[in-house]
Image (cartoon, rainbow, N blue to C red):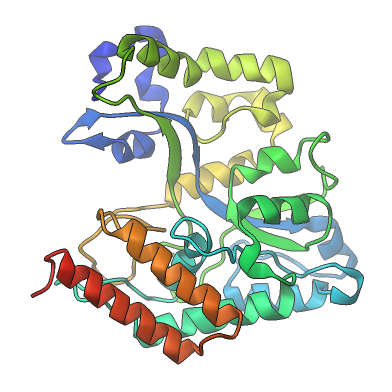
Length: 340
């Protein structure tokens, strides 16, 4: 159900919601959902351990930097890992990490004629680097680890770096949920050959089905739960570091939030520079950074994610994985009518 600006109260202040999120939740100029929180991705690292080991995080780290730092921090014998990355198969799990790496290594899912390009050298470079990182510097059983598992690992002080969603910052700085409060630095997501698509843009939002039994009540709830008033309520109850992030300019302009949330500026910068309309160094026919904006992608992305997980566990080589991915994409696009 579309929610036009006129249907929202003036107090809601729709212009305060980041335009990039509004655009992502709109079709033909109509807003179809209200964002509860928004996120990009960045690099979280133990700044205290970096200082102890004489490591310096650059303003824009590269994947080569990440490998070097992970090697210096790694201590598997004592249950400490240089780097935590998603490995759990799924279009929104391991592929969120793999897609951003692939983008930054110069890879694409399709060319401008929708021919799959999952067997290119750029994909091989990205998958090789990903495999090296998780095998050398990640925990055992990485293919079972998604966002929540890595959050547990990092917040317990068992990993030196973690590349993932910016929403994690509020949890890592909460003393009730984290053992590394005040010890975490926040840096841009690493890049390889291009910054395009190196960090994502996403929102978790409220939308109302056309056949909702109480659409008006649902709309009121969605407006309240995504309002400035709700953010203030959470701040009063749980503290400013725990408010829903990434949705409103007023939150990031608030001195109290800036003081309580050391991740705020890094989050804002990541969200402002993520561009789903230009996710690759080459021109592509789709929008999306960790996904391709077509209905078929959920199934295709999960299939590719399963193949990547199989590569990590040693079931297939990188070359075999790339062939499986390419074949899966070609079959999907032919069945869906994109290709003859």
